[in-house]
Amino acid sequence: MSTSQGKMRGELRSNASSTGAPSSNTYTKHTSERSLKPEAMELIRCRHLNIQTTHVKAIELVSFDEAENRLTTKRVIGQDLFHTLWNPTNLLGRLQGHRLQHPDTLVHLITEIGTWLRKYHNSSAGLTPESADGSWLATEFEHKIREIRASNLIPEPKLKKIEKKYNVELQKLTTPDYLPLNNAFQCQIHGDFVLYNVLTDSPTMSP
Image 1 (cartoon, rainbow, N blue to C red):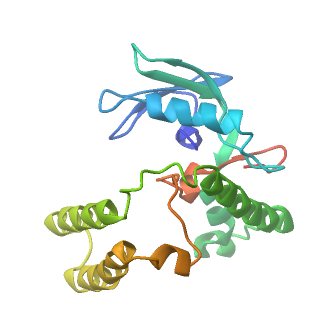
Image 2 (image 1 turned 180 degrees about the horizontal axis):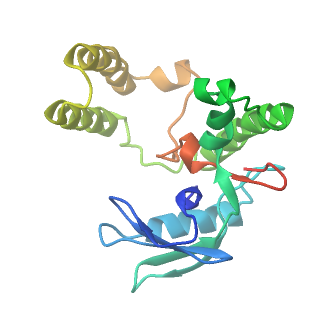
């Protein structure tokens, strides 16, 4: 549930979708592209339902100014999980003698992140509209493929393989009983769950 605090290093930063301003204890996010209210409400929901494990939890909401569309959360002093793992384990890092700090702890926490994610998914089971049959996902996938193709971001042969493989899988979502037969269910998902958006607390190595 990160607000990309891990990319902040004490100064105002902007990306394609938002602007962030960190202070010593908080991180304030603003955008003119969309309302941040759903994100704020989701942070409140996670707190109300106590969706967390021993070391993993969502970013803590401090305040939300709906008129200004400014979302303020407690700042995590640490780094994103990608760099925690990547710097010591990429080829250049290994040649320079880098080593993972507390590897056993990291492996345990990565497993715990999966436990937290499952708990988060379970918390919204049954809350999604009955009409949410997955067709929107197929439409969004086709839209992304068109954007990638138009911008030449991936070689065409590879893009065609991706398109062929996942189009087949996405079409199955509309098949009756497909989800229960595969031990799956409709729920709300994180939407941007990547290593960059998992922040690790330096003193305790806690996401």
